[in-house]
Image (tube, rainbow, N blue to C red; front, side, top):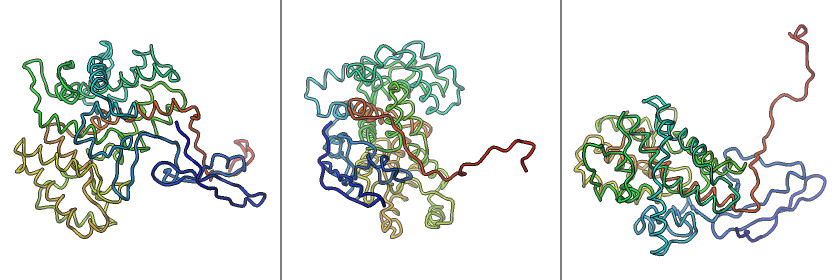
Length: 433
């Protein structure tokens, strides 16, 4: 990985001697102060949530939250979502360049012919309760893959990394779909090589052995968009988790399983599920004013899910793409008069026009629209985060591979600001107050 050039230095006095720290510049984004030598001077930085800390250098994804920009390997997300399928974008994330026709064909064949799971993995599913959340099942099954595919887990071997990466990209959709089928008590549907990546997942989700499944092209295209828009998002909580776990040399299946666990949180990947839960809590268009009032009351515990974003200070660029897709799906399925979707569209209108939301830049985000689209497609709320994990697997394995290929990478070891008791002597139990 190319080093960032040094732009300048910052110097401060440590009461004993001046400390000089380089300021590094990347190809885009904020400069960073290289603080790696601070520990030698007995000083650490304090940054809860890592709001101002760059923990790695990466060439994969760039976000400018102020301008509303998201780029994969330099390509704007709008162009990729309009012109590429998910496997083409996955190739870009993993290899750094868009594939030519032959490369894409070979890559696609490699992935679609590896979607089958080891037959004994079906026994792992059956160890869970039928009503287990699909994310809980995915965490367990993905982690258990290390007990079945242990022939290529040398993380320092580029060929082994690629084999594991391809396996994960191919098999996680099967695991996600089977998690849903297991919930229902339905037989597992095996993947079919004739389908596209998106069509195959929909087949495994919705088909039964009773009749042939014919994918709806409009819904398949919409699902491709969802996957592309969620494929990577820089150093978020789950990606940082994958990197931190992987930094110890942990196998790729354990690392991705940890990422899925992190993604499950309602503040992260669970946001689109929480958005639909919020819509169900509101229940009817007639109650919108009541909940808008509650949303504006900082003392009210009601959480307005699906609006605003921690990173984007303007419109989430993925939301604009998903908004168009949302209307395409609703038109295709004739759902504009469905009470839940009428409620969602009214909330969208308010968020885009109401001064409270506009002034605070609380625009509908990608979770708002993707949740509506998935619900319209017949995907239950409990599967929303599982599909997010399926999409994000492409980014996770690209980030994991990049980290392991970096000769400078070290095991993660955050520091702390200790605020506990100072040193004290042991007191025998018969003398304690």
